Length: 244
Image 1 (tube, rainbow, N blue to C red):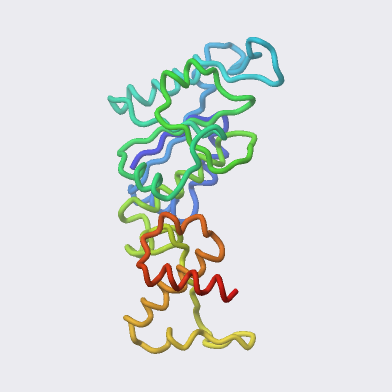
Image 2 (cartoon, rainbow, N blue to C red):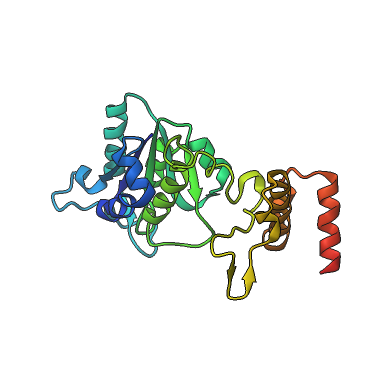
């Protein structure tokens, strides 16, 4: 999968994405991540990419021309117009289902805003998706872009060493991941749940399912509305809530 990140700070983006799992996947050729410096496409001799907004207001606005030309350089190279995601607090909040959807793309353009935003005219021209990583404001779109690359890349076959780990972790099926334990069997007086030592895989799976549901009910009850639960499981949730 190919990521093209349009940014004013390419070094910031690449330093963060050239390490750990994502970095190794890039080295193996499973991912291609490229940061494209928007400043390289400005026609201003001083490399200026911003100006004051019409109508007044605080701050500066990124101009349409360099953003468009940076985007066009990618389009010309790949031969079509890939989905272009603009990272903005005004977008829909990013979620796991969206990560899976975007992972189906061969090429993906991520547009990082800065200053007070980007000229609306170029957004209307090139953006297909408006995405936010949460209801707060950052200084630019670089960190959100890195979050998307990480989340999406995990869905790309071969990126994770364990084929199951991308589909059994938190938020899969709108449930949080169950608690996990490693050696030693006892630490600080706390023992690993006996069921995990039983060797009975069916019982372990059932316990993990139960723990996922209980943890979601406790920490993220909003997710349960979309989770696929049996009637028995919903009754158990209500019983636990009443007991607590």
